[in-house]
Length: 106
Image (cartoon, rainbow, N blue to C red; front, side, top):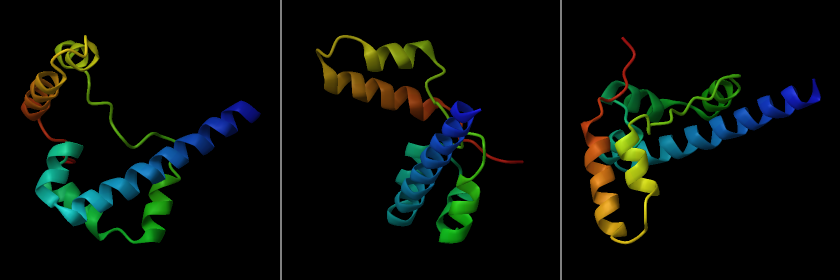
């Protein structure tokens, strides 16, 4: 029981850190944030407008809010393979990520 409670606390911390970072990115450069976060304009607009109280309430979810974007084996192996040609690996990973559709709530 104590371990489950600890995991929930850690999920809330991750959620809050993610939401704060996402909001900062969106407020500084919305287009870049949309690309880096993999979200559409609607979600970016919502993130930008959230109040601190809303961020904390949303972070309190028992589910991790950020999404693991490396579902593609090619992308994951590009990022984890030999560090030679690191700049080219990063560029290749960026191209692969750019091909992925943005998340939206319909």
